[in-house]
Length: 570
Ligand SMILES: Nc1ncnc2c1ncn2[C@@H]1O[C@H](COP(=O)(O)OP(=O)(O)OP(=O)(O)O)[C@@H](O)[C@H]1O
Image (cartoon, rainbow, N blue to C red; front, side):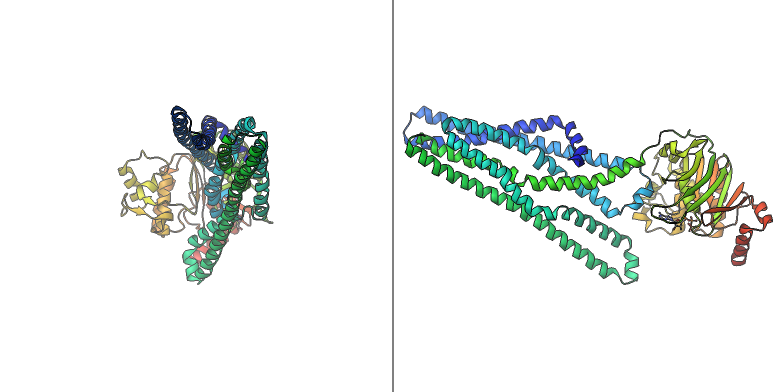
């Protein structure tokens, strides 16, 4: 039950609608039972040729009850579904708002298909908890108890028969349904997540799979999973149907039993024969109204499983939300790292090993080194994208663990190696953060990065499929320029550009970031002369630090890298 705490909280917020639907459901149930009982009574009464007004009164009551039943059933459906949809939207937004502040690192660890299956499928499954598990028993039991009470005035034996029938429906049938279900719990959820994951991976890697001739193998896997999912769904549906069929069987059986017992009671003279048809109709209706009890355990188990899957995500998230101090906006940022070591989850080696570094406010720092030496990871640590970091990192003297992650992101103008482009116009892709920038300004910015041939209404495909890598890099660069913030963190911002464009872009960057703190990871060693410091990394350690001239004079690691570059590029 603890898995459903979030759901229970959301239900409390919808208590008004829930209460109305319970009351309306109760009225509909009682009206239904009375309607059919009265019909039975009317039929029996007709045989004895009662006065016309009695018949008119009974027929009018039946009509009226029909209307009451229809109206209250409508009210029940309306309010219960309104509550359900509000609950669902509450759950979705709660889930999504928890995901939003998460570090990309956490999101990267999730398989996108599985996450999607949780956001969509598992949240959806929770609707049944309310519609089929939480409130129907309240209605069924209250309608049933009222019926038993009224019936006991006519015949205590028939009332007892009803109780026995209800016990079988409420406990016997669910046990049978649950027994067949226990081995299968969660199969649909798991297979749905697997199918989403396999489909997402096939879509992402479509071109590579095609080139390497592995597409059909992947398609077969997807088909196999889809078939297994269909089978699991069919088994689930069969189980539900089995419960419903057993319930219908029980309803008919009880009606026959009422007929038999009622006949005996009439023969014995302990019951008025006028009530027989009425009691049979009562039995049929009251047991019919209790259909929800037969399928309740199946839905309950399913919803609990869905809640459990969602909880695994939410409990992870709670761990990662702990920042509490703000980084002052528009202040120059000073970065200090003191004996910082870090490794990725499950990795045996240190990605960053005992790194100490000071990046003063307003300074320009380049981080260079071999591929895989930890340059990007170092930038990500400044952005507080990773937890479990050893040593001390502070921004403007505030330890990173005390800083609100979002306040760092607000201050930072970040350009990572991979930038996402959304399906939409070029304008929309540039104005992801703000929409108060004029077209003229946007076009000026585009011209500054040699993209004057692009139009703001040009359509960009999902993930920027119709852009070259260099164009993507420059558009992301413009996107970063349009932000405000005094901390510039760039990871190889010009790696896909030709030398001429690269020089222009770097000049523009240095002019724009003139008064700010700039940290730039770079593969290339050209243009670093103007940097205040160059940090050279190797295998997670800082091996050299200094200005360009100092490092060249030292003739150490940087000098060697520079010689290699000169040999290769000239
Ligand atoms: N998300 C991750 N999970 C686990 N290991 C990672 C992850 N990202 C990077 N690594 C590992 O950390 C090490 C440092 O990676 P990082 O990207 O920081 O290096 P880099 O110097 O920026 O490399 P490059 O110049 O190729 O971009 C690499 O060995 C890499 O395999």
